[in-house]
Image (cartoon, rainbow, N blue to C red; front, side, top):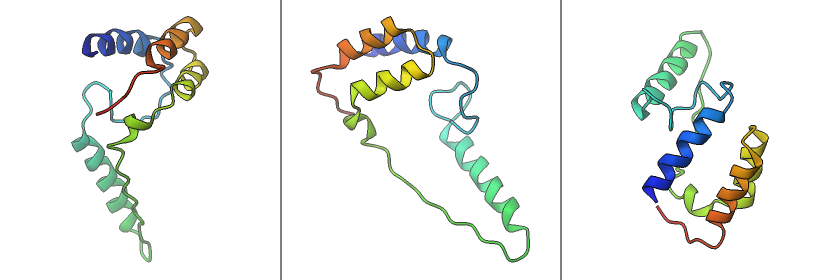
Length: 102
């Protein structure tokens, strides 16, 4: 499965448009959770330097997100990003009927 992930990830990353969210830290080279925390803290602290302002924060735990992936939705989203239909269908075929766990 790890070999499959590396192979497909390499193919998909080469095909994705460069317009991905710059605040995405997962699966990006030279990015980590520490970068995400630092960027968020900087943004909030800069905002709080203004008088009479406040910040609301929401933390969401996505640790089980991969257990609930619906393959048809994944391939639809990949297709909308410009990923080749053949690759999307291949991923769909691979994921259908497979139990997923993290």
